[in-house]
Amino acid sequence: MYLSEVEKLARYLISPGLTVPDLCKFLVLETFAHLKTSAVYTSEITEDGCLAPVGTFGLAKTVVADWGNIPLTIEAPLTVSVKTNQLVLIRREEAVEKYPVLVEYKGIPEKWDSYLVTPILPFGAIALTLDSVPVIETELESFLRAVGALASLFIQRSKVRVEPFDRRHPHSKIREQGVLTERQVLIKQLMEKGHTNNAIAGEIGYSESLVRQETMAIYATLNISGRKELLDDSGGG
Image (tube, rainbow, N blue to C red; front, side):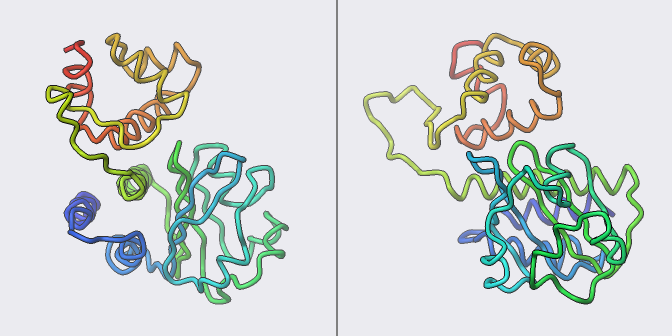
């Protein structure tokens, strides 16, 4: 069941002219429909340590604008999920007791049963407002993380600046269409040396999961298909 939904989303993401609002609408009405999803909120981590909204559906734009960027220093479902790299599921009746700061966020829908946040490291997080209370099992978590990864890659690609073909370098396939972070540059250098994700994680002191997410972000930024193409273009293949 989940594999089918992931495949549908992947096919949808190659639709011409697709926008982030289109993606969010599809997530609510198609991908997460079986969870009785009423709203989706996607966010990215900013350079100053906040979670900023990049796309929503089912929430009023004025409400999201009033919320603004959410500092990672506060204790809220979104921030806890990102800081721990774990799914966060809360029921409506326990929300304020667990996270008192939610009282300050006006405009939260009155009718909902649970709120589910999936971290998408190193990008950000995706949050679902549900009219159900799902049981978080391994299969469901894998599904949520897979969807989050696809969504984040699409959002990042949509921001990439496409550079014109440079005839002075006809043999170079890699076009740096975006700027890699310092961490991504380091990971790219280790990949070019033949290091595995596990070895890179040990080298720089991060989890293998985070390294895997960073490699996906690197591929998206450089507009390449994967490690083989990276190594081929760097002369390491």
